[in-house]
Image (tube, rainbow, N blue to C red; front, side, top):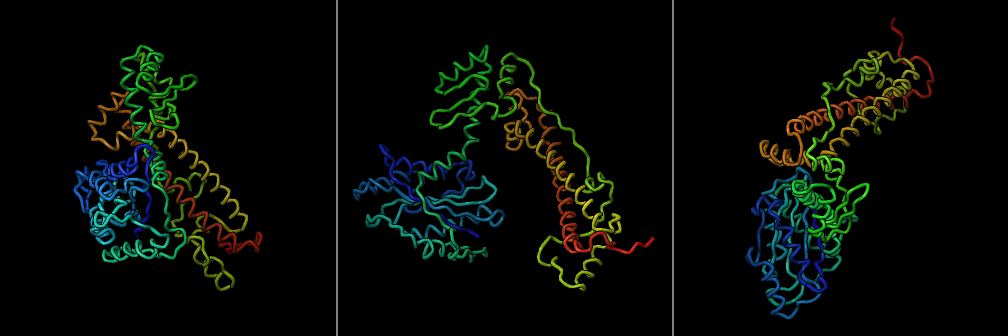
Amino acid sequence: MAITKILNINESPGEPTKHLKNAIDYICNPNKTRNGKLVGTLNCSRANVLKAMTATKEIFNKTEQRQGYHMILSFNPGEVDSDTAFQIMNEFAREYIGMNYECIFSVHEDKGHIHGHLVFNSVSCVDGLKFHYSNGDWAKEIQPITNRICDRYGLETIDVALPGVCRKESYAMWEDDTLRKTQPEIMNQLREKIDAFIKQSSSVDDMVDRLRNEGITVRYGKHLSLKLPGQTKGIRTQRLGFAYSLEAIEKRIKGEPIEMPKVELQEQDTSTIIRRAGYRASGTRSKLKNEQWKYKTEQAKLQMINKASTYMETNGIRTLQDIVSRKSQLQLQAEIISKERTQLFEERKGLQSAIVIIKNYPEEQAKELLKQQGYNPEEVFLFESNSAKQLENLYFQKRSVIREQNLLDDLETVYSKEQTKPILKDTK
């Protein structure tokens, strides 16, 4: 389902249209809009959007205070493709904006979910009246339009009566939040600066001087922290990746090789976790814990025993104590899996910049970029592949453990009053 959000774009002190320009630039970002193919306009041309909006304000002598509005249409992951979302944005703009305001809209496909943006002028190009938004407009007009369009495309709609589904705020607040989300771009800039100056510098002190000459704020002590102009907080270089820690930078300047974590792929299947504890996987399907497991009659209890009997016989479970013991073993194995996953995530985090390159560039180009940053491309590719497969294995192991834990939880609930009585008759 698509939900619409509206933000105010207010005047920026000293430069009234700054926030408006930033909003237009942001939604038109070619890296987010398939090189601009997912950008459209209404009542103006794409080349002169800001000029047209500014001219309208000047004609009607309304250049101060609120400059425009920014609307966002968010879709659920996998709900819609980019082209369909773009058509929805086009229809929404024509129905809601009409001929009254200059408008530019786009669809961003760089995230896990498709979402659309629309920016329009605060002053009407038809009669010079300023757009007025009341708190009830979202439920009365904005979201109902979105719902009608989505319904035509066979998409889910949203109940406008749900509390908290829409939030109206200032663009400046949203822009601050967006800047935080652009942290990866800032980190890439810092990596590029460090890579360039490592080649030119004879020592870390020399590199620090060169960075400061570029207008970068540097804190140099036990750690190396950098802050680009306009940033509010510095970033420790070790957060940029394994090759950017202070120790690694020193080695790269000296021309010494840097080491990276080694991960060997362990071939394991989903039943490994069961075998570790000395049991065989039963293969029995278990139901998730819900109201159906709250058995209150003997008949329901017998039905449950019939369904669980194969699992219990296979694993030698005959008493409540056996259930408790098995749960203890599974809890231990779940903790082992979690630790292994955490360690892998930390190792991958240390090579985040290298992994980003692998995922965003063709193999040959990625290897060249990795080599420029001081990595061994073959080792990095092997690490990324093996660690990803290992994480996948651990995921399936954890899921297997959780399913068995759910089954045992329900068995324990039903038979907790039985104490240590045999649950199944010994067939021996």
